Image (cartoon, rainbow, N blue to C red; front, side):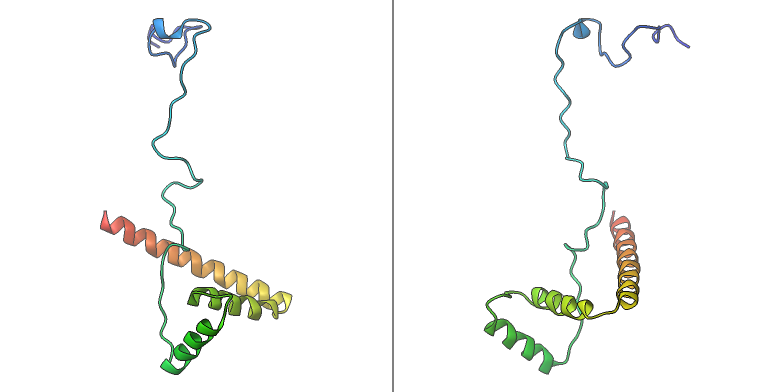
Length: 119
């Protein structure tokens, strides 16, 4: 143990003058705010695609133009998924949630590998 770490000495002080008793030190301001998990990937910001027959795409487009509630396709799809999942039995809903969780984890891992590869 070196002489610098004596008992009673403040290990966090930068110098003896700047750590006088009663002197206020400004807190360190972080460059980035901590949002929970560092470098986490949010699936809500990512985009995915799937192909549908043109007839169904046109039906969805017409539904969006008629609807006053929905402006984007993903809003309509979210409502359709919600309606369908709400009709599930408890066991089917649990199965759905487990599968959804697994798919999200796989997608996050894939996106993390892609992000690490591009660095």
